[in-house]
Image (spheres, rainbow, N blue to C red):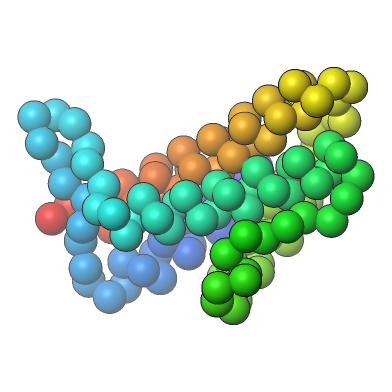
Length: 123
């Protein structure tokens, strides 16, 4: 996951290069913009799909691809997510398979938000 985290930081850095800060701090609580949340949710959804496909032995289904072509960054991140998913064991029950997908997805989402905090200035 270290390579994935580094790639997330780099990808977020590309967004930050535009000089736009969006996340804020209110009463000691970090608040993200809808755009930031949507961006991280998209990658988390891809990560969940990749892990569930691994657990179930089928190809990943990328929901958003039906609406728009994935960016080069998204394609590169998917390759890293697939590689990282290989480190997880195949679970034996449906519940455990879904739990593995949720855990993996949450980890990616958390890394994405952390990358925003580290690379995008507070507004």
